[in-house]
Each structure stands twice: as C-alpha cells, then as structure tokens.
Image (tube, rainbow, N blue to C red; front, side):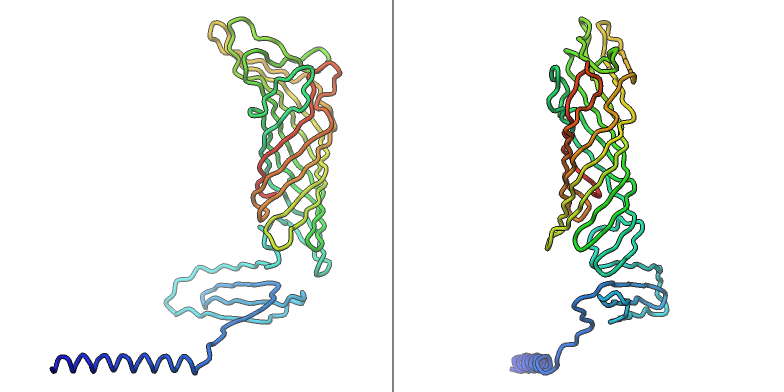
Length: 304
C-alpha cells in the first residue's frame, strides 16, 4: 500500500507541473527577436567579441533598421571574417565592378562562364562526313564584358574565346588541304586504319546579349548575336598504315571565313548551370572549292 501511495503521489506532482507550465505558456506572449519584411542588404560581421547582424533599409540610404549582437564568452576561440550580400542579387556574384545609378538601374563590368557542347555540321557539301557525336566546342562566352542592368534585364557587350572541332573517326576517308586553301576528302591507303581526322577553328568573339530573369523563379534567359573573328584554322589526321605504324599529318594552310555571326540562346538555373544553343547561317570556309557547312552547337553552360 505504501508503494502504491508513493507512485500515486509522484504522478499527481508531475501532472500539476505540466498544468502549471501549460498555463504559463498560454498567458505569456512569445518574444519576437528580429522581424524585417523587406531588407535591401544584410551585413554579418564576426570578431572576437561576437557576431553582429545588421539589416539596412531598402531605399538605398544604408540606414540601419535592425541590429542583433550575439556575444562570445571570454575563453572562446574565434576566426574573424566579414561578408556582405545583397538579397536582391540571388545569383552568384559575377560582377567585377558595379556602379549604381539609382535603385533600379546600374552598369559595370562582369564575366560570363564556360560553354561546352557538340557541333553539328549542317548542310555538309559536297558530301557528309563530320560526326556530330565526335565534334565538340569549348568556349569562354565572355572573358570581360560591359553591362547595363535595369529591372529584371541586363544588356551586355563582351569579349570571349571559342575553339570548335569538327571530327570524323571512320576509316573510309580523311581531310586534306587543297591548293585553294580549302579542305576536301581523301580515301585512306589500302590496309590503313583511320583513327581520326579533324578541322579546328579558333575564334575571338564579341557577344551582344540580352538577359532576362524570369519572375518568381531562379531561371534566366539569355539571347543575342555573337560576332566571330576566326583567326586560326588547321587540319589534323592520325591513322595506322598497313604495317601498323602510326602516321600524323597536320596542315594549317587553309582559309576559314574570317568573320561570321552566330545566334545564341540559353536557359540557366541560378546563373550557375544551364543549356545553350548557337547557330550560324554563314558557312565556315571561305574558298569556293572546299567542303562547307553551317555550324550548329548544343551544350551545357557553366556560370552563364
């Protein structure tokens, strides 16, 4: 009986404590530590004293509208750093220089990222040969550009680099340079095994691009023309002859069209990764007696 009485007493005490805590929670209002509805800039600074958070107003006056300090104890080990982030710029920071004219417009200098894609030689004449699955491009869309930004839009003019390779890996024919500084097909010698034959073109490019951030999403759309100055081209073929010896032929005495134009479009997520397409209505080679085609590229963009 004493044991039952002791257990009953203990249960009653616990129930009373729970009722008391519940009543206190109902009668006391919750505390709001910090609430800001529309900040423009958040600055978080950490030093040996503690962590300080400041929120500045949205009107551009940099007036501090809220502040919160978390203090450290005297024996804490702290690595100090400072970081500033604008909440309105939810993409990664690609801007090298930004000058704000007013709340909605600014201009500056920035960069664009890397493009990696597959090249298709469209309308190959006089006969097809280049393989889409083997041909690729690597480009830096904009090493440096000047931009003007307004609302959700950005207009930029930049300078970039591009390498395009058009390749064939079958053993029936390979590329050769002709006397007119063009390119043509030639069959391999009897018993030879072709490894690959490729045309490479290097370009300096001037992209003039319009960019739009789609509302209520992390997706951005970019499109515009790219002016290419094709400064270098070469042909290279690698094969094994009938005796099994490796042969390499390289020739850069060919003449691509020096100035071409591409039309570029892309969709990217958070300005970090996306897909792009670029097409040129202008044929690649300049010689009338040559293999010729129009380039089409589809690929992935990193940081565009």
